[in-house]
Amino acid sequence: MGKKKKAEFYGVKEIARRANVSIATVDRVIHNRPGVAVKTRDKINQIIKELNYQPNILASRLASRRVFRFATLIPAVSDETDYWQAPLAGIEQAESEIKQYGVTVDKYFFDLNDKNSFTREAQRVLESDPDGILVAPSFIDESIPFVQKCRQRNIPYVFINSDIPEQESLCYIGPDLFHSGYLGARLTSYGTGEGKILVVNISKEIDNHHHLLRKEEGFRAWFADHGKANEIHKIDIRETGYESVAAALSRTFADHPDIRAVFVTNSRISTVAAFFEKRREGKYLDTPNKGQHPVILIGYDFLEKNIEYLEKEIIDFLICQQPDEQGYLGIRNLYQSQVLGKPVEKVHFMPIDIVARENYSVYKN
Image 1 (cartoon, rainbow, N blue to C red):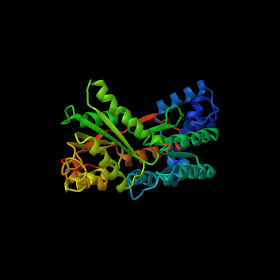
Image 2 (image 1 turned 90 degrees about the vertical axis):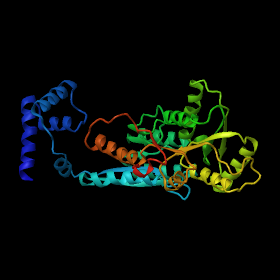
Image 3 (image 1 turned 135 degrees about the horizontal axis):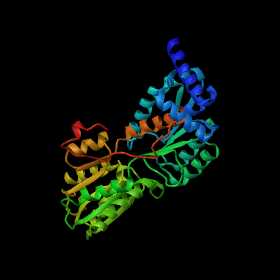
Image 4 (image 1 turned 30 degrees about the vertical axis):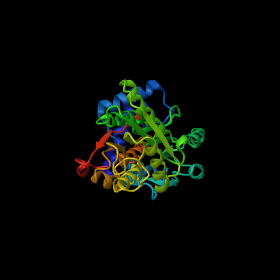
């Protein structure tokens, strides 16, 4: 360890000698801190490049003895959906990798069905005064004042899963919501012909869930762009329990028995699939065409309940966008920016994966 520290110090000292500046000035440039003139910074960076100097980050962090505290604000895992277990796993993996550098991650959770819980937890995050925040801005109206307060306090924040445009986040990591809905429409069109299509939004806060609305926008855009004359119906189901979902679907299919495909805009597709399973078994006798289910049923996310219906061939396709990687990259980007002082990619769209019965067994979330 002594030799490594000595070698690193000699490197900084040599850079300072060649640039004719102090060691402190070189240190500010290496760690991307302010207070150095552009011309001097460029000169030092050129010397660093010529010497192929690689700072010992671990030794530097241990020497500084500063602790960086990040906070995460994401939905809690619930009985309705375990989607948020995957981003949490990614966050915890990143945390385990960077804790040796003096970084801690405090986790805060809100109820996806209760916007007031987001506001309460957001206030707790601000009171903790973290060095950076990872947030899933599920509620637009509540998220905007929260990130405005972050900016006032110079706290950088990363968005995952859904973005809020023009809110000056450090970066966004997640799906391209519009194009994910666009792809969903293309999949839905296969085998549908010119038949009716149903879009299903299931959320207690639909009007405030930007990610659902953006997917629907992309879905409708595909049909418009390709001159398709399909009749598209939509139902917004605000009570997320099975009985409420089943009742809404039963009414819709009674009015439109010729619906040929269903597109569910979030991970709650398993609830819709459960309805069609019971319908196939002869339940909902008041529903025309009982015993049938749509030609195509498409929704989101590689979850245990969804996979069960994929195996039964009730769900045809799941659109998946690596939620664990979103949590992981969110924390790593905060670390790269705030601890290492390096720039990060402003927008990182996750791949759009299509999972079917034929390939789910080898898919990694």
